[in-house]
Structure formats: C-alpha cells, structure tokens
Amino acid sequence: MLAQTLCSLLLLPTGIRKAYAQSTSSSTIACNNSPSLCDRAYNNVTYLGAHNSPFVRDASNNYDISGNQYYNSTAQLAAGVRLLSAQVQTNSSSGELHVCHTSCSLFDAGKLSDWLSEVNDWLMDNPDDVVTVLLVNGADASASDLAAEYETAGISDIAYTPSSSSGNSSTSTVSSTAASASSTASADWPTLQALINSGTRMLNFVADLDDNSGAAYLMNEFDYIFENDYDNVSPTAYSCEPDRPSSVANDTQQALDQGLMPLMNHFLYVEVVALDIQYPNATYVTTTNAPNGGTGNLGASASRCTSEYGRAPTFILVDFFNVGPAIETVDRLNGVTRPVGRTSVADEVMSTSGATTARLHAGMAMLCLTVWVMLLGVA
Ligand SMILES: *[C@@H]1O[C@H](CO)[C@@H](O)[C@H](O)[C@H]1NC(C)=O
Ligand SMILES: *[C@@H]1O[C@H](CO)[C@@H](O)[C@H](O)[C@H]1NC(C)=O
Ligand SMILES: *[C@@H]1O[C@H](CO)[C@@H](O)[C@H](O)[C@H]1NC(C)=O
Ligand SMILES: *[C@@H]1O[C@H](CO)[C@@H](O)[C@H](O)[C@H]1NC(C)=O
Ligand SMILES: *[C@@H]1O[C@H](CO)[C@@H](O)[C@H](O)[C@H]1NC(C)=O
Ligand SMILES: *[C@@H]1O[C@H](CO)[C@@H](O)[C@H](O)[C@H]1NC(C)=O
Image (cartoon, rainbow, N blue to C red; front, side, top):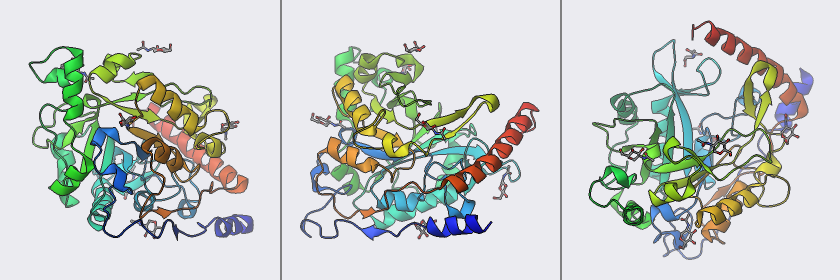
C-alpha cells in the first residue's frame, strides 16, 4: 500500500515543458507545427497517430493495463499527434455510445460526445492545425447515431466532407485504368493550407460505415485508407503488406493504385495465451517507438514501409506516443527539423514493476470476468 502510494508519487508526470518556444518568425504560419507542411496535400504528410487515444494509463486508474497512452488526447495533440483513434462501444447500462476499450465493462473512457468535444476544443484553440479522427465502430452505430454525437459535441462546419470522387476511385464512374484512378484520388486531397483556409480541419474516418447517408463527413475508412496488420506480439513480426481492406490484402500495388493512403500500425501486444487476451506491451516500448536501434524499432519499420510503398506512410499509429519519442520518426519522414509551437512531454514509460504487477493481476481478473461474461452471451 505504502509502496503503491510512493510509486504513484514518483510516477507523476515530470511536468510538461514548452519545447522550441521560439518559433522561426511570427509572420510565418506553421501548419501542423511547420511552415513547410502548409503547401503539402493532406495525403502527402505523415501524421503521428495515438492508438486508442482516450484510453489513458495513469495514476488515476493505477496504470490500468488496458490503457494505451500515458497522456490524454489534449496533451497528445499539444505534443504533435495529429491522428487520434478510438473505439466506440455501447455502454450497456446507459445505452449510450462511449469510447471503451473492447468493452465498456473493461475500460470506459466516457461518452463519445465528450471525447469529441475535447478534440473540438483543442481545434478551436489551434486554428492552424488539421486533425484526423479514426473511429472503430465496435458498436455498429449508424451514421445518424454517430452524427448525433458530433452535434452534441458542437462539431459541424469544421468536419471535412470529401468531394464525391476522392478515396476509392473505383466507386466513381468513368476512368477505369488503375493509373488514372490513382492520380484522380491523390489529386483530390486539398493541401493543409486549403483545409485551414476553408475551416474544414477535422477529418473523420469510421471503420466501418457502409452507409454514411446524412453525414457525408463520416468517411468509411477502407474507402480511403489501407492498413498493415496490427496484431503483433513479437518485434520481429511487423509487416508493411496491406492487411485491410481484404480486397487489397497482400497487394501493395493495387492498394496504391486505388489511391488508398497507407496507415502503418506499429505497436506490440503482450499475449496471455491461456486466457486468450492481449494488452499493450509497455516494457518494450522504448525500443518499439525508437527512431533507431533494437529489433522492431519504429524508425526501421517506417523506412521499410516507405521503401516498399515508394512513399512515406500517411499515418503511423503507436501506443504510448510520448516514448521513443515516436514523433522523431514522423518529423524525419516529413523533413521537419524545427517544429514550431509544440508542447513536449516526458519521454518516459510510466509504470514500475510494482504498479504493473499489481494492475496485471487486477486487470487479468477483470479480463477473465469479461471473457466469461461474453462467453455466457450476457455482454
Ligand atoms: C510526399 O511527397 C514526397 C515527394 O514526392 C515524397 O518523397 C514523400 O514520401 C511523400 N510523403 C507522403 C507522406 O506522402
Ligand atoms: C489532460 O491532461 C492534462 C495534463 O497532462 C490536464 O491538465 C488536462 O486537464 C487534461 N484534459 C482533459 C480534457 O482531461
Ligand atoms: C457505463 O457507464 C457508467 C457511467 O459512465 C459506468 O459507471 C459503467 O461502468 C459503464 N459500463 C457499463 C458496462 O455499463
Ligand atoms: C472500391 O469500390 C468497389 C466498387 O464499389 C469495391 O468493389 C471495392 O471493394 C472497393 N475497394 C475498397 C478498397 O474499398
Ligand atoms: C497475406 O500474406 C500472409 C503472409 O504470407 C498470409 O499469412 C496471409 O494469409 C495473406 N493474406 C491473404 C488475405 O492472402
Ligand atoms: C514485451 O515484448 C518484449 C519483446 O518481445 C518481451 O521481451 C517482453 O517480455 C514483453 N513484455 C511482457 C510484459 O510480456
């Protein structure tokens, strides 16, 4: 108990400090932390993504092993993260849409509308930034149900609506050759400056949302993006090959020809085979997120995927984004050497063996219960 308290005290974030406080020039506008990105098309920038952004592992929940990040979404954005992913589930006691990890009985980070509102608040405070949200639709919510959450959060005009021909160009008529389809899809994305000028600075993807009638700003993820496999338990297992959508699985050329943007998942799970559960591997994350050095480091994976795709990935999704620091690899891909206006956070793993072990037992008991309840078909 005493040890636990001491650990919590010792593990408090060492404080957020302003990095790169002096920007280059007050007359230069920095788009997503750099003037050099303003004229780049949306799909020609690499964005650092916080995987499961709302699921924060910190002292308030005793470093819950279901948490994927150490800092909340606001702090992630301030530190340079520009893609936030979240899982949407139904909270069974209220029937509301919440952001929950796997199940709301396992890890419930509150109402979807509250989380969206947090993102919106940050966007309002930061008028030269473009943010992408990726919702995993575990609740199988309809476009109108999701749109109601956006409305409650006060989000309407700021959400970008694609022109009808962006994304999966095979859905748009006329041009049928892969080459022309590709160039059409790529050319359709505006530059960051254009998104900023038009005030449509929030791009929203949902996996999956086959019918977005009435909410055209909710883009069906796999009409625009392909992802490599995310389910890795070994640092030697990362692959750049497309995994989803299944229509382009293991076919990089076809994925690129369709104009789909590459999303590179790069995070590691711990697998507990006996229980058939997985949780984020924090003990190896200093290597997982490193710009170089060690098996399965982020910098090496990013270089490999860039070479296989003939272009950098558009999105790189990581757990515990502050460690590495992961942003270093993204800055390298973007050619950004002097980022402007970023708040940096401590590059540290925030748990001790004591806290982790204690949580592990509690977490496993919870996971066991969840699996058991699900098997019973109650959840
Ligand atoms: C952006 O374009 C440049 C020049 O073609 C290319 O080298 C880079 O990989 C592209 N980056 C992304 C993220 O598309
Ligand atoms: C996010 O975390 C910071 C500390 O890192 C805290 O000051 C802020 O209140 C939190 N914001 C929200 C919306 O929880
Ligand atoms: C639902 O939400 C309530 C209030 O936010 C929370 O207390 C409860 O644990 C959540 N989980 C489930 C499974 O309903
Ligand atoms: C693109 O659209 C076509 C026609 O609707 C569909 O067959 C194909 O699976 C889609 N591809 C992707 C990657 O969504
Ligand atoms: C893609 O390739 C991997 C590795 O060879 C294989 O395990 C997987 O089944 C393939 N997927 C599809 C859909 O062909
Ligand atoms: C995390 O991954 C590393 C590398 O595979 C492994 O050595 C370590 O045991 C894993 N951590 C846990 C808690 O299993």
